[in-house]
Figure (cartoon, rainbow, N blue to C red):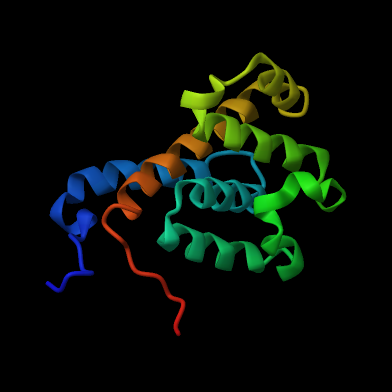
Length: 151
């Protein structure tokens, strides 16, 4: 193991990985949320958390359905609201609010805004989506999972 290699957490704790990936599977296969929206939220949460592996993966996933120009502007989506639908903007705002919950305390304003464009089940599923990616980022970033990007 060299100084940049860290534990492969899912090989060391396969049962924990299976449980966590079960949550990811629920989000990607058992909700009514559009696949593009899920990847958009996964990307934004990963950007906030600084997980290179997940940013790499979800940027690539999003590029399958979204223009590169738009994907590059995800970190500053509030400055380009015309590029994102009302539902996408609400999801991005909620993703930031929940990811930074220790600072935001999931404000009433943010909750009102997101609940205005998502029905109750979709709002719960969106919040599970955010929670799942936060959990995965908290393993991906510390253990420095590799990226596909090449020099």
